[in-house]
Amino acid sequence: MTVDAVLSQCAMVRETGPGKFIARCPCHDDRSPSLAIRECDDGRVLLHCFAGCETEDVLAALGLSFPDVMPERIGEDQSYKPLRQRFDARQVLAILDHEAMVTAIIAADFLEHKELDEETWQRLVRAVNRINSARAQAAPLKFKNWQGSQQPASITAQRKEAA
Ligand SMILES: [Zn+2]
Image 1 (tube, rainbow, N blue to C red):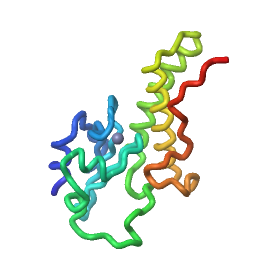
Image 2: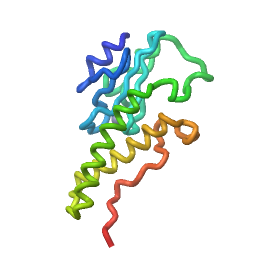
Image 3: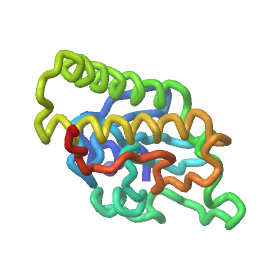
């Protein structure tokens, strides 16, 4: 299994560096690429959805499973290395850049006292959660308990009524 086989199943693939890509996550309604894909020197292909999808679910959506992307069985001790070692600054920056732009656009509307519709609000929630997820990648020590599926400081999708 090469990274090409994974990429061929993905949409909106963008290369962010040698062997590093971001693409649309097949596992959730992903309008902007939030799936980071990395090819390791040892042939493994690492996947991480910045929106919080479980890697197993992402693989299933691609018609793959862990053995497909992990040629050799990895030991307990290294089954979940700090994500810092998995994704580089450019991938994190690409996510932060896009989500910061989305947040800035929505914030500008909000500051002009425009009514935010439900879809825009949900997009803002996703942007905040992705930014937090990316921050956890950039500074894992700040988010020691972060395990990939848990967001360090996710906000709820429940819209607060303006009092
Ligand atoms: Zn996802």
